[in-house]
Length: 352
Image: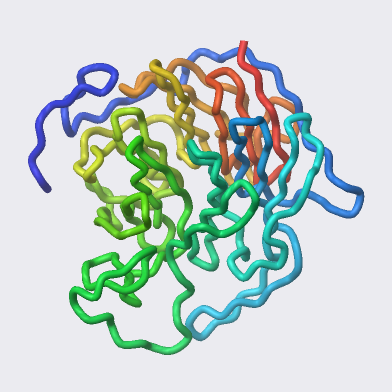
């Protein structure tokens, strides 16, 4: 483990110190609009992998519904329902579907909107992270589907972009393709961070053009290692927050991947969102399994030093209750969009 020095992150944190949040955090009063989005009669929402809003208030939902698809992984075949990307206007009215029947949309994991209003989707089954402009045109593709037969490793120094080619670890050799990625985030310089989190348990960093820079993390329980990386968020200073759901903690790294600290006792973090503005907060969902509505399910609001400000909701199916939150959009500190897998819906929350 590399050595490191104390840092300032909203408050003074000692490197390697676990910040333990209080499960008995005060409840935050809030209102909820369940199902604020209106779909055509012949389309249903399905399991919501991701939800995000752009600067105009348009809402994008990446959902696990669509035409049945067969994918081949190794010697096994997997059947799943496909995925679709929907766009709604600021009033919640359906406006269009983007990328219908796209080869890159098989198992919706996440959708994010960058500061330039580009739409990014993370697809767990294809291993793709896809950047679309506001018109739905593909601008960048990180990752690739694994080949069905072995291919020679690229020559050292061959270079590469978007997870293709290159001789550096993580730069696109067959063994370095994304394995069930879960999230994407950016810093103020435009660097791209991908949570390659379910299969590889690592974080990969690319520059703004999609050129691989480095990756860090592996399977384990020590600081800097992951059980799973289920979500990412980046603060204004470029620090990277990773939801390590497999180890029931949030880990914090500097921009180069050096471990700084970790937050425990926020349950099993599944989705993360960083608020904008000079006084930032981090929202984290405590995931609960679909069959268990008696535990977990709440959303925590944290300061960037790990202090829990409060919690919202609990597990359940009614408004103000949550079923496996996989996505949080917090373009405003007190207005959230929450995407639920188990309840197959989006809730709009307004904090009081």
